[in-house]
Amino acid sequence: MGPFTALSSCACRYCSIVAQQVNTIKGPLLRRYVNQKREKMNSEEVYFKYSVRLRIFSESGLNFKDIENNLSIIPNYTHRKGDRRTPKSPEYKHDMWSYKLCLDKTEPLENYLYKLWSEIKPHKEYILNLKNNATVDIFCGYRSNSDTAGIQVAHQSLEIFRELEIDFGLSIIII
Image (cartoon, rainbow, N blue to C red):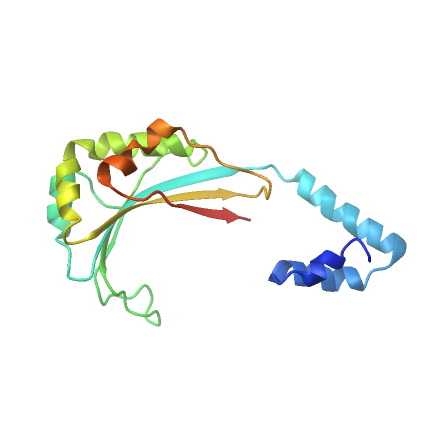
């Protein structure tokens, strides 16, 4: 069993490509190939980036102006049911109002959550009432080029989820 046998048993596209490349390389060439890959991985600066969006969806329609006026927030993005992202894209199945926080992407996730909560906390009752006719969520994103990275979030910053009765979810993308 060679050092890369495990790669060929993995079903992901990346591992199958690497396994194919490795299986064609023998002896000293294999060592050089592996060392070049390690050097490339070690030379890249590791980064961690975060994003947070308040999103409101409804299949029965949203009054964008009403949301904007009640939250005192201008959305970064909206679309209507039936709109298309591009002419060949499928139609959206719902209206969506979305507000993305503008912080430095390297700020910790909890800073995004604290900031969003400070902006919408005065409008908590409006948001809770809005949930009777719409889906409200907070989309949290985490992106890194480190496959061994993790994330820790201060429990105090999760107050926004408890108070708005929204589940916490995190989209994780490792590049």
